[in-house]
Length: 150
Image (cartoon, rainbow, N blue to C red):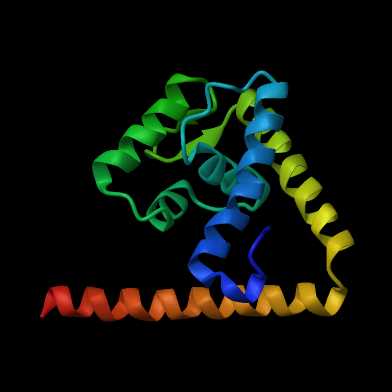
């Protein structure tokens, strides 16, 4: 028998829920022949192509060190998803844009299914809660950065 949602701590629910998107994205990428996508690659590539984010900012948001960030971008370049520009920025290749379309389709499929399982008010509450958690994280990271400087 599965536990009641109120009996499970929020961090565990968030981790499990994130897995819904991850599984859908991995399946869509594999279907499209993009099974060589590195871990965290969908976040960077999807953010870059689908949301107009800057690669540097997206990699920074992952919270990984400079070496890991550089390796991720290098892998995406080596596997043909990104190309380096002369100003040291990166842009998506045709292959990268196709993979980003698969990522977007996977996210949309989970979003659409979720919308059939909860009411619009519940979905709005979920979004509001996640935004609040993001704000808490950002505040705590600011405090941590200031403490490291002092």
